[in-house]
Image 1: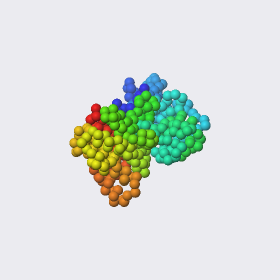
Image 2: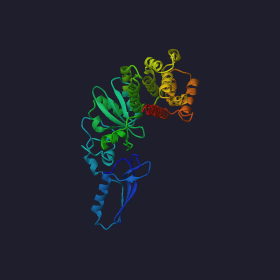
Image 3: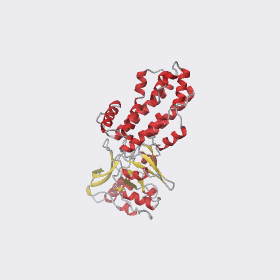
Image 4: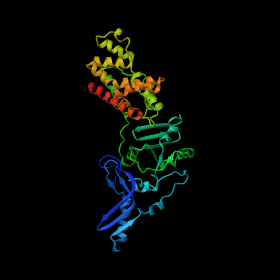
Length: 383
């Protein structure tokens, strides 16, 4: 079976293009043939059904004596077998997706018809306390409520994908809401969602989930090595940790709330009292030396004292946390336009972006990468 993942690593897309097929001196020119094209390397594969239909045509016509054929495209005969499920609101779907995208014809015919939605379909679920939207991986998520749970993917074009078989089981009012956000297929289902469901590939955790895991590892290592509880308010922090996921629409409010929550679990939850006591007991510093230190500056002091790192090294290491603080101010606090702009310029310069970058998603991705690198470096020194 042809795979959707190209050898170059990208996902192939179902396209309908002019195509010339040659075999045993027979030439078939198609006006619009379903093919799988890689947008990165340009590699072209024929879907299994396309190949099967071509071979059937050649077999049926090999004795006619003709060697050149002009055809419009594929046969519609299989489409006649595809029945829309009863009891389901009628969505805009592409029958071609079910037949020509690898693996989507598995199971009961039509079950895995991909249904496409605009990204803002998730807004209703994000801001309604009855629902939880969680992105466990970068392009694979889950919407849950007390009544149902439904997985979804996000493709490279920012479109949300669900399977028709999952939608059929939703309450009717949910189906009508989804129908209002339904858009035509772009024939591109490549995502961790697709790969996890059909290729059995375990999706890589999203970057923010990686941050959560590294925070936990750091806490455990410091506890084992030094008997110090680096963080406090574990139960409260756990509540916040569970609700943090990658922003979806990357509005100012959404990224602001995310930065606020990340700061709470990485900085505000630092166990100031215990860290100060540990430093006083195990170094030449006195209580008065630490009186003005909180949060990041206190963590800085601990790293210098007990990992034997230079001040310059630690300052560079903890840079992401200081940038995170500024991003909180920019996106989640009331500030003047002038102050906001100054801080954004400073943020972008410090994390290696063009100072004029104002793309929330780009800034977020670079920031999370910097935080991951920070934790990995500290953990490396502890090991």
